[in-house]
Length: 243
Image (cartoon, rainbow, N blue to C red; front, top):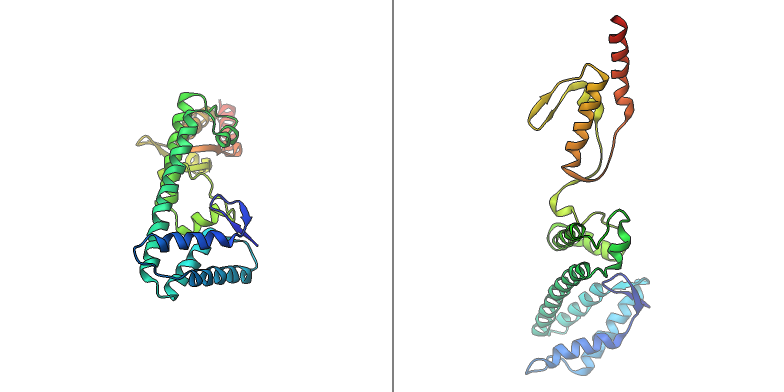
């Protein structure tokens, strides 16, 4: 039987880890709440429940089972200590993860970042600042902005939440620009109304301004259809023929 660790990797289930964790919590108080036999019973029950699930079980699921069994044994104070310990460890893990990733960016030894985007050189100061800001955004996204089930699914590899390093800013990514609507019906650029163009060159000029404005308010690529410029080519031809 395997368990899924917090980093998404798998390892063989080890009942001794449950026994040792509960014993440490039990022995940390002046009065012991459970006997060794009761602790072994809890560990055996958790192992039985994990086997019944017939799949790899996450560390969080196992800890939830332990917590439930502590309550079932009537060890409410021990359960509270266990919950408090889990919470504190969670805070430490989150802090260390973000801090270590940022430090690894500064020291240029973050292999994940080096391979993530061939267009960015992580040794350049401006790129490092962008990546560092991304790590802060990713941390906020996981801790405060996304529902816990989405965060867990992403950690377990069931889904991939894309662009979490920009999510805190609520920016658009990889937009398909509705050039046809803005050229045919007019648009607003920098609080200025831009009416429908009457020549191909003007349409191209406006399209360039639209793309630049969209680029300044999003990240990633943009897509347009050159077919939306075609009506202005025909309009230009008719205009030239009249002359």
